[in-house]
Amino acid sequence: MKTATRTTSPYPDQKPGTSGLRKKVKVFRQPNYLENFVQSVFDVLGDAAGKTLVLGGDGRYFNREALQTIVKIAVANGVGKLLIGQGGLLSTPAASCVIRKYKAHGGFILSASHNPGGPEEDFGIKYNVSNGGPAPENFTNAVYARSLDIAEYRIAELPDIDLDKIGVTQIDAVAIEIIDPVADYAELMGHLFDFPLISQALKAGSITLCFDAMHAITGPYARRILEEKLGASAGSVINAIPKEDFGGGHPDPNLVHAHVLAERMYGSSAPTLGAASDGDGDRNMVMGSRFFVTPSDSLAVLAANAHLLPGYKAGLRGVARSMPTSQAVDRVARAMGIDVYETPTGWKFFGNLLDDKRITLCGEESFGTGSDHVREKDGLWAVLFWLNLIAIKKQSVSEIVRDHWRRFGRDYYSRHDYEGIETARADGLIENLRSQLAELPGKTFGDYTVSYADDFRYVDPVDGSVSEKQGIRIGFENGSRIVFRLSGTGTEGATLRIYVERYERDPERHGQDTQEALADLIALARNLSQVHERSGLDKPTVIT
Ligand code: VG1
Ligand code: CO
Image (tube, rainbow, N blue to C red; front, top):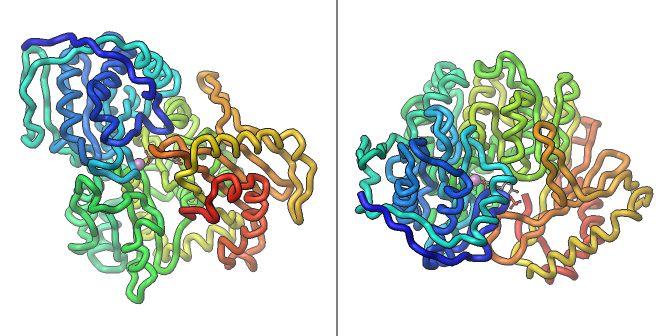
């Protein structure tokens, strides 16, 4: 086998965001753009000789093409073995599972997650390390630094490999193995949950299910696990065939984008559980009949009930949530006497806490929940968790959540996104908020008196690393909060996210409409940030 060293020149924009490098397909298709990034990762990794890497992606447009390039660069950089999901597919949590199970050195996951796919849309690439989780910031910063002065990359001169045939091909010293993308993950799920109990309930029809795979990666996983293994009736998984452009949709599991599911769940013969997942399978939306579970509440409910499930019967070590996620899980942790950690947005910050055995469960308000079984958030895992819980409690989703509120109180919560803002304007808005931080504490706005206002700074309790400027937090004396931050996953302009929450202990007042319950805080958030004047938008583009 021949390998070539080719000269290249750097691109200035390869800084990974919240979850890897995400750009338009057209950007990735520029000469050597992908090659530069992948070689930069190998340069930071150092000696890859003989090591095993895992490769796979969410199947979006450009997935296969990019994979072939990565294979050739990996081979030229001396890896010993590549494990590749058949068809170039691996969901993000399955990739994490495979890296851990086969003790791989790491892996590349090709995905732009919830961003749309297609020739005019988005592509992404992320490197995960040997614990199966996203590379930490010091690694991604080093990759970025390397990408700014890269001068050459190495590539093997090989024909394209057959991504569809399961089995091993030996190329000189390198073993390239195409694996079933679902099998290892499905087996792991079987250890965590009570499959016989779930199966019994599904077969008897006492639990019915609609899972919307949104034409993304979870289709094959959900079909195999929910329909084939557990016996959910055929057709329980909808939009199950992965498509390169997600059928023209936006694979973001929320009420706006998963509207087919939402209509069914608000219809006359709604199933017991409705769920959807995103492009790469790490997010989940959970619904009951005429009932939407806020992701922050979902995390709290899972934490309060985990000990009932086989995989978690020893109890939880601790829990963690991203900073903008509601404080609902904190209340559960306090009641259970376990630690709760508040981390910046993005799964990479949970890795150290999980590896150090400080936490068992963690989650984000953006429809992401997970546990120590892998090092990524895991959409189908959350759905199986809910199914198992419903089968044990023999209650509906809404009964389970309302019981939870009665016990712990309810955290009304909503996120308002303003997408496509001109970058300079969005930066100006955040700067303006920063300039108010010093004078806000002690000020009163209607029922709300500010108790603290800061720009969130995280010190990792395990390795002491510091992450600055992770979002503006304004906390009030009654426990309510407003958070502002700019998205780190978009590819066009800036997206401002405004997160608001208010705690209500009194069960008599748990039946309010979320937007109404939060109306005062939303108005205050708009005033403080002058979002409409500064963004040029007169309302949010997405409300979750
Ligand atoms: C968003 C979410 C964040 C999540 C990230 C990656 O980031 O807010 O909670 O971890 O997406 O999820 P941002 O920076 O746009 O707010 V995924 O499903 O894209 O891997
Ligand atoms: Co995702």
